[in-house]
Image (cartoon, rainbow, N blue to C red; front, top):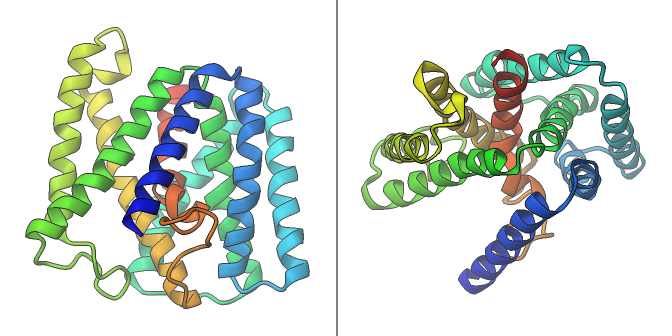
Length: 264
């Protein structure tokens, strides 16, 4: 299992990094569409949709994502999409987790799935106009996740949300915060020409992305627990499904896009 997990991680990292820097923005967006389609199918399974409804949901997600891409008129459409996503992750998702809502209505889960998936695709597609910056944002999520896992395994005692994800601890969250802070200082020193890396704006970006990534991770864990599933799928050997790999990005990337593209 560990060998398969490491091998899959290496292949994914190499493929993602290569595509990130080699593909023109339009083709990067196109390359992300199969990922969006697979993630939407996994979500529909976790939501308990019938097979016909799964295909309908996947098509709606795919078509609406493309229409939003084509309908962009300056900032207006994107601000609405990212604003809706951030509202969901800042207000609704924490309440959903805090009160352990057992939502089983297919329509409600379908709307939630759309909010989880489509703004993420749009954010990843748009942020790739600056590949190095997007890779740096990925680094925040990857580092926070890795640090939380390692610190939690070594020193974790107090459970973060035992009924949602028993393996996560407050010590792990603290370790992730320290790791991201060190990463911020190092990156802002190396790349001083990136204005959003400096001052309060940089702190807000790094802290926000790290914090939102935790919420996204916990939310997907709760959806899986409600569905009685260990993983969102089996597409990635040793890792599970697409949603298992991008859960932290579904909450953090639309937030980053809103700050970097439309507020900064």
